[in-house]
Image (cartoon, rainbow, N blue to C red):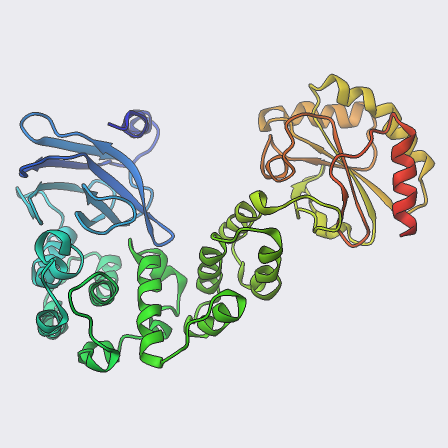
Length: 462
């Protein structure tokens, strides 16, 4: 049992009970299976499930969750994993909702009378679509022998029934009543594409696909990132549909930058393009490959989350050799203005990584001031980056003022991405970068030695 996740959820529940004027979601359930397992609760994070709690049913098969929902929308409950939709079921939660269910061998049932109208609609939709769910998603249990010969008629039957499913059905929750249309659309696409892309004893050619697949377009589905990111299997679906559309359009599959460039026009939204590129880049083995992809596709890394993923991919690949691009940090200065490495192009940059509690760091300050004075009027820019924790920011500000520290003073709020990228495990650390933002050295001499001034002057002339 994952006690950390259970504990954090329990603590959040108790602590929030007194702080927030909102009601928690309460889930009560029972397990009716031959082999009970852990029951997990997932939120949806950027088109993927993210586990937020788990529990083990008691001897009577009872389990439950009490939590404050981070958002109103889709969550998952089941015994499956984060990467496999089998045995995980979709529910809709908002503040104060109650859910009572039984997890059965291959499906679930709602029990009691306290379930929300939204989850009753989702239950009814699950029942209608269950024949194709079992053959596509839960195929290792309920549909291992299924092939396209029996699946395609079932799919077309469910698709036909889905067009009338919502007639006369409203929950009074306008947000859900709009969202359920998307959920049905995405579920159908998920079931249809997952069936094609999972092992079967017989596989159809694209010419043998049933009518539903003719309108199954990733171009249409990927118009907005929110639609994909709000669906539990959104990113998985994006990849599955791409493979199907490639087959339908007879696009030749190629590896590398060229092959990826041929696929991206099929994805409409630029943020989703960036996400897809980074998923491919996560498999790269060296820095030169990383740069080849980034030079072509870097324009699609539009959100802070995508930029963070990009940096996480880069960190283990970077050799930190002279001539490599510097890490493009961005931190606030003493006035709260953000300063990035990119802002400093055109200058030879000396980065000083330090902290107010670091004795050797403070010992270098007089020498750094002297060096700054000697290089005054040149294109050398000193940038001091404090790795003091966020709680010590006022202490840092006071020291900057009291010691009349020069250069550009930045606050990194602890050992974060900069330290990880440059593999800094001790301070002070001094690093030098040329005017184009390329690495000269990530472990330079200190200001207390004459070699640093020589290095900076040499870099100025290059």
